[in-house]
Image (cartoon, rainbow, N blue to C red; front, side):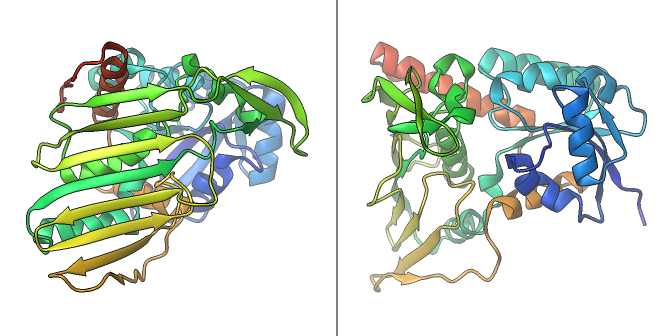
Length: 359
C-alpha cells in the first residue's frame, strides 16, 4: 500500500467549517493523514490538536511549513489570510490546498500561482461544486448531446449572507476589501460550475448594486450588536455568450428567501434541465435535478450518490491524490479571479469586458 499524504492543516478547530467539510473526511481516509496543525496561537492550536487527536501543533504557519513529515498544507480560514498563511508552505516546496477564493483579489492569486509554479508544487483550490453529483450529471447530459444544441442557461440564486443581518463571526463579509463577497463566494462557486459545464464567457456585461447600505450584526444568540456598512454588493447580474455558443444570464442577490433560493435552467433544442435547491451556494447544497427530453413532461432524475458539503470536498481530495486526477488548480483559480475582476470592471464602466480564459 502506498504511503499516505501527510497533511499540515491551518484553520482546524471544533465547531467551525473545516471540521465538517475537511476533517470529517481526512480523519477517516485511507489516503490522507493529518500530521500537524497550526492556528493563530499556540494555545488554540493545542486545544484543536487535543480535540482532534493530532499529535503535533504549531502557533505559526512558518513552523508548520518546516515540519519534514508534512508534504501538503491545507488552509481553511478567512479569505484575507489565505495568502500570508499559505506562503510559507509554498516557499518550503510543500504541495498546497486552499479554499476558494484563493486570495483577496486577482493580483494576490497571480502572485501565489506564479510562486507555486516556480517551486514545481501541486496545488488545488476548493471549488467543490465541480464534484457535486448534480453538476457531474448535468455535464454528462450536456456532453452526451441529449439536449441537442444548447440555446441558453439562466441561474437565479440567493447568497444567504449579505442580507438583512449576519452573525458577528462572519461580519468581515460585509467589507468588500476583504475579498469575501457575494460575487466572489457564491458567485464564484456557481459561475465556476456553469463554466465547467458550458465553457467560459466570451465576454461579460454586468450590473452590481448595493440595495442595502447597512447590515445588522448579531451575536450567537441572535441579539443585535451593531449596524455595519455593507460595501460588499448584495445584487449582481451578469450575462454574455459562452465559448460553447450558449447565452448565459445570472442574477445573485444577498439574503435568503421564502421563495426561490436556487433555480438554474438549461434550454436546448431537444430538451430542458431545471435545478432547484434550498440555497444559492451550489457547492454546499443538495439540489434536485429535473429534465425534459423531446417535449416530454419534466421529471426528476434521481441520483443515487450522496450529496452535501463534505461529500463534494471529499471527492476533490480523492481527485487530488490521483496521478491524473481532475480537480481545480490554482491556475483555474486565477481564471475565475479574472472573470470576477471583469464583472466588476464591466459594472463600473458600463461596458462589455473580456478576460483571458486560459492560463
